[in-house]
Image 1 (tube, rainbow, N blue to C red):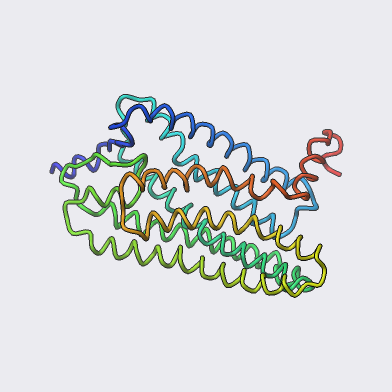
Image 2: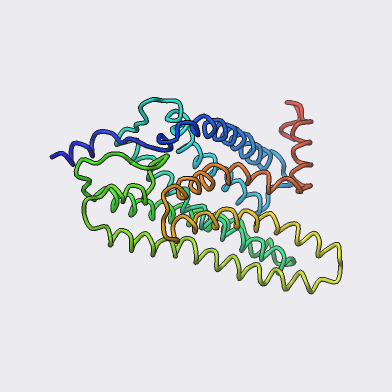
Length: 310
């Protein structure tokens, strides 16, 4: 009865309540990263839609990534900001379930979407003459839909498995938000089956896509080295360096969190990095040295309302 009562009540998110001096610092840092995430990712989506020159597979997938990151940070950021400034750091049971499912779904989708983007870069560099034929609009839509649906399915399974565990009245989560590893620690029953499923799905969604990405970039590297033009080599390396940077940030922190032996303090900090910092850096990494986006942004800013439709 006590367990049922807590399961329909609320959870307390402990965060860094044992070190209150950190709360203001984290509040400021997360607020800055959240605002920058909103601005950067919204800019990429708007510019990619407005400029016909960016109606290509690469920017279709980049817009998907930006939309995903907007939703991902919004599912976690506002709740964390409120709790950092509140005396009672609680989240309703329904809110925790929603946060768990949405963040899991979006995180899983990003794992697959980054692998799809690596295949797009492989086709662009290794099959340039056949690129538009290979990356047809139909295939791009199919790959994007598959990534989104697979991420949602994985999140549904994990959420249901996690919520079925009895907690015997325990409701204090030693984390900033509702995430599977932290919720499993509340269980007062055997969680070995959940841990095995978590490990297996993490291998499938982290190591398998990462392996595909590394193979793609192996082919890309070989193709680039065969180019006679130094300018061509430089341009190809620049095109792919941004994606590799995102891959390193995202998979590196996620693997550190989910596939290595856990340390709760380390886990808290790492989880902030891949949920808040990486989505902020994605637009910067993709656009910092990207002349196409710079040009499209200036053209978009230079438009007046009467020329929008031309």
